[in-house]
Image (cartoon, rainbow, N blue to C red; front, side, top):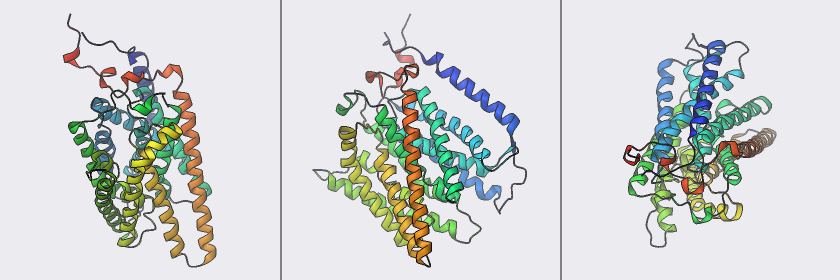
Length: 416
């Protein structure tokens, strides 16, 4: 006989998704149009489409498999990632289009890429609460997080004149701190001892590592897709810098994981969540990196910080601040993102011609970080408090990290 679970999500998930999609169709019908002139600022279909495809792979395959490490959460990790990402991307297209246009929103490949990059920030936030939330909460988190991130992007570009590339690349910092506040609001007593089904085995670990490899392979495109290629060599420099940082961070993460283990073994979970650190850090500082050794140094330092953070900080955040971070987003994305911000500050100051320019840049750069952290924490807190209401019905402790709560398994169906 099949086990009994919480009431069906039919009364919540289906109406929410149908209402959202109907609203999107109406908005796209009256307020959007396909951009007819595809060759603006030298941006052609053939130059943008490969990057668009690579970002798609990262968003759906990379994050989808990255979340599959819990043994009994594979269906939810992959399918809910797809669901949440496509909803958030549609919302991101609309919000991004409201910024520069007074007429109809122009849809192009570049606007799709920008929306997907904003959605990636939501994926980082969701990683922190993965397995402890239902699909209704995940969809609402993605909508509110993308709204907050685009607001942050607009504030930075309007008030501080931050470039589009630098404002979007702060997605790692925004997403990790947003998710951190969610974990604090969603804290459950007793989770220090680990949830009953929060376990992984060789098969789930292998699929999760596959997702990490997708992220690792396509992160150079992710960091360079918005780089202005009208300046010769600039996009190539971003790709090469990201790859070198990723290569160094992979080697460093393996060695650090072995050093942290009492018997000198490599921890698969620790390694897969730290080998991306170099790419994350260089992504935030990509406009300031000029030489290969700079990217490699950033990658090395990011991997060291991420590994130590995964080894010690995650436990301290749980016991000291009641933040149960499922995928260690703070050490995997937050700390490397902050390192990249510091590296960008130092590299730009080094290249400034005079002291006045350096001070001006430092002030604006620091303000951009403070605004990003303030908005991420405030929107994360508001989102968490809203979704903690009883109407959202978060899963009970014994049903967290369990596909059977949401998915039909024919071999477990009750036979009549």
